[in-house]
Amino acid sequence: MTVLPRFAVGVAVLLLSAACSGPSAPDVSERTPASRSSVSPVVLLGDSVAAGQALPLTAAFAASGVRFRSLASDGGGNVVGPFSDKTWPTLPRRIADADPSVVVYQITTYDWGSRDEQTTAYRKLLATVTATGAALVFVTMPPIRPDDFYAPHVADLDRTGPVARAVVSGSGGRAHLLDATAVWGSHYQRERDGRADRSTDGIHACPQGAARFANWLLGELAKLYPDFTPAEPDTWANTGWANDKHFVGC
Image (cartoon, rainbow, N blue to C red; front, side, top):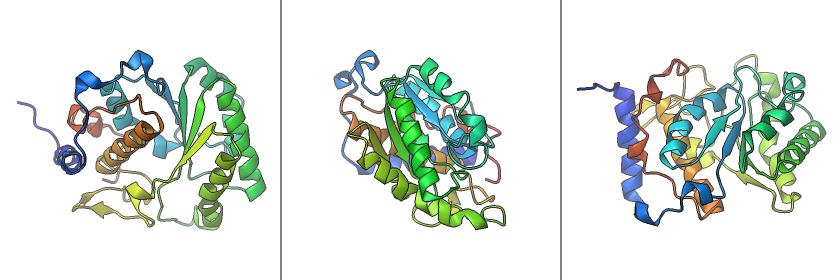
């Protein structure tokens, strides 16, 4: 008998409770085959926050019959601000090689810069993604508890959502913005429902938070792409990803 960590069990319980409280999911026989789903393949971009989110997303998309690839990068992965000069030389080729239908950009904690710099970078990302025939989905970043490193850049980070929204508005329907406040709230919250939701570092997610994010993101993509039906959380919530060493401070 396999004994799951307490936090992994909590993930499943939390998600199953949420799933049971909403509308019943369509019967699996009514799902569109993955080969016909306009959402597949999905590519995820971002920094170490996205890298943590990619762990349950990998399991959730696999259970949903959708190809998924994470191009998130620890200590970088941003398209504006520090380290972005290391992102851009390889990013267009990496995106093209993944042959995505949808590219999700988790706005990063490094997206520092002026409004003009952020706008230019997000437009460049939009052009890069749409050149492959894919759609771009921006996701607002989780609220953080800024330390001395981040404190000087809080205003820049607060601006990323509105800047992305403006770029989306001018995209002619080629981009979307998902507001993840529904997942994280408007302020950093260490615990939720009595369990660790965010890391003690004030930045990253714990397994429970990452799982809630994955469940929410798949639901939002299903609204954008009606031929995509997400798998039920109990098919992926406790498949081992919560034991990954990426989750620290949980």
